[in-house]
Image (cartoon, rainbow, N blue to C red; front, side):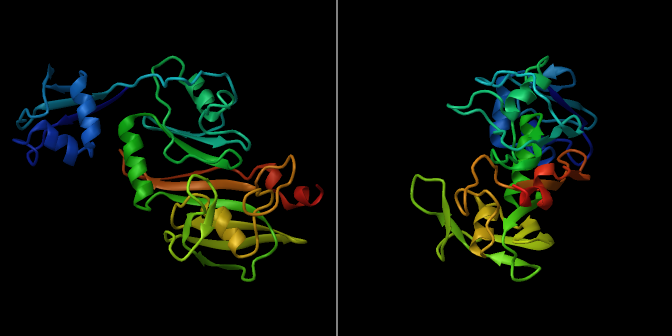
Length: 292
């Protein structure tokens, strides 16, 4: 449950509740509809509808009630928490762990672990910045629908910044640069992407951090958020990620060596710049990979 309390200021006096929800708090139409269906809107201690006009000094209280995620079983599993406040939870997702359950993998996911962490309250699992199963690193979980919407909007507008680390087979020609190559789905109905002139714009900045033999450790800053962007871009310049079965060469028993090292974004409520960092896991060290 998340509460927003506002003493109506002069610039909002005379406006109806819907206007305040939309323009002051940034609520979407769907979220406003959800509030109308429950007891989420109180004005001066009385339940009101969104068309009710406010007056200077009125106290408006908005309550977001949550429901337990359906079909996700709480499971007692280790959860590496990097940051937490009233609206957000940031965790370090380990490699080889799916973010969400699927038809064939209903347990041992990050969602199962998060639902157990919040087992004493109704909680809906929302991960606006999800990571693939093999990708480790920072993952943001929104604690309420309003926060999930705001983070999703930052991602859509390119305001949610991510920094990745990848172990590549091969060494880029330049020690730092920008990969600009449009991406589209290879064939309808399949997950694999390809670089194509008629694809959607995709841009990734990179720098080489370390090399060992034919391996390189790269830091990457995706400027757009296309599916498989980093994996495909690195393959496109001839340095696929180690273990990448789609865009490089599969290594049996080994995961794709891709790690979301940090995320930076403006907090939806406080408006502060938040940066969350996850340490590089041991399996990203070049020395260890060279010995495999």
